[in-house]
Image 1 (cartoon, rainbow, N blue to C red):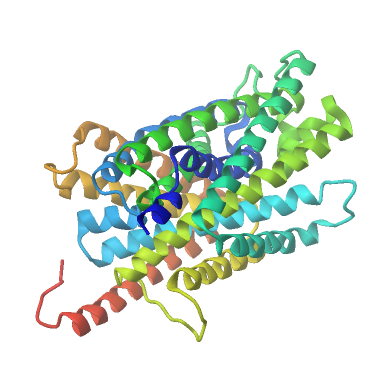
Image 2 (image 1 turned 30 degrees about the horizontal axis):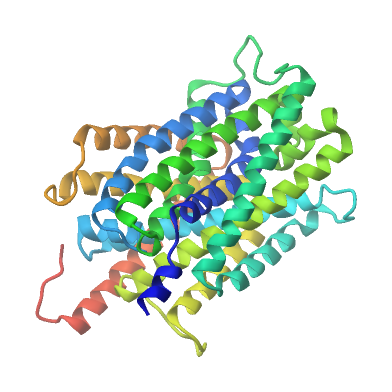
Length: 441
């Protein structure tokens, strides 16, 4: 039995593949145009700074995961620092929603690139339905074992990373490394918009939390969780910079914004022709498929742990099978619904908002409440993480307040509803299971 569990564990290579699988799927293909919309000709620097912000803020997750490796990841961290409270449950659900929103972002991007192919005669109206099909496909694959998932993630992550680097390098060489969209003398952005671009860029790197959420299933988690996060962030930083330089060498800023949701495919056209477009679409399909599979794997594990901890309500609805399979159904239904209802821009912004609020809760809770005898950390790093999160959240609120205030209202309502539901649920759970104890914390 022990050998079987060991064989089904996720290796360091498998964990890195999961992390890069989620990040590259969302980062390059889904967000390049969105980031360019606010960063202008500072597109490359927005990616670089978003990566640095993510590297600093990942410190908290690495330290907590080293001390308490768990398949609940973020949920475990929040419970450790806030107890079994409404705040802990609320933050956990915000993270879950952020990850599910990310799946919708990737699914929608899958549809956007598929319809660009000259061999597939489909209109943009099919984009959400193609995305929904990918969500269903990912759900089916996630019913399979950990070993199968990590092997699939490794092959797909390797193919897309190599494919992207080859395409980008070829484009840079063919263009003579001329950068019309990033080399302008005058800035085409302002400080607030640029910070908003960094906030959206952080969403391209937050896939490292996929590793944290699968910590309990990773071999030697005390060492390998932190290593996998660092390696994944480094790989993605290199890929993002090379690809954004390639896009900037092929298209003007106006052309990037015009092809916002499929800018990488359009960037391949001037230099590599229709063959370049087709190859980019193939790599995009590989990236988005592997990304959503890895993300669904991690979020279902996190939701199962939260269910087991009685932090979230759970209903079988007459479904057969285990709780693990039930939560996969819930995740797929939510991801599919968001894919159909919202476009890429709104999905990206809402995902970044939920993630940043949760991230602030994590850093503050660890800084104030973590057991320092078990968790060894430097307070100044956590304070730096809090400061960076508040700055980029402020930038995101600024740009979306100007562009799409309705989205901010929707996000605020959803957050408030989640908080109220969790408060009511935990109150009932505490009254039923431990009526004598006081859980007012």
